[in-house]
Length: 273
Image 1 (cartoon, rainbow, N blue to C red):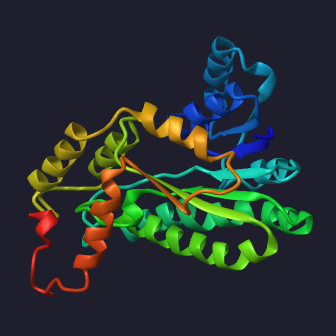
Image 2 (image 1 turned 90 degrees about the vertical axis):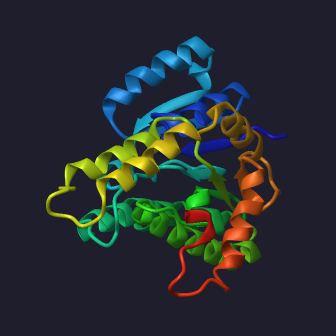
């Protein structure tokens, strides 16, 4: 496989960080975008430990910051991995809509806006690859994660449209859909409802939110599996449009979507009981 130049956003932590280091280890030229300057110091140390300093260039990249984006747009890359994302938790029936806007802005609008200049370059060349890190949350829903679910469902539609528009022009477009991997992201996402939720003012039982958070905390997987799969898939020229892990989540997502055509309007979804 030819060595590629790969820019990955959200590379300061979690799956993005592990994938950036792993791709560099494989000999690819990786531009790792970190959200905060402080993350750069830690990633430099990890790159030294892995012996990949020559293959890993670290840049400050908050995709909501125009200055950061303009600097990143100067790069010419073979593959763009849109991995940056955030999440807010809590019942969408009560949560401040501004928080939902914030999630949509980062996970959907800013991801697309950041990608567009790279898309133009790739179209001009007649080649290139776009990878968007979505989630199984974009193919199903979970109570109290509606804001995150909405953003990933919207991202799925954007990426499918990009695929329809760009593959005839020689580009490759794909999603990666991780399940609940234990990187800290899911736990912190469930924590943040406490910033605005008041059990004396809101009608959603706080115990239900805490119960959902506990279920998530107890049912996460080792991220090593997902990182290894991302390292394998990202440089490939052709593979499945969606890469979903753990593999049993493929059938779970299909089953969830199929049931949306038969469930009654006043019924609790079987998977949510």
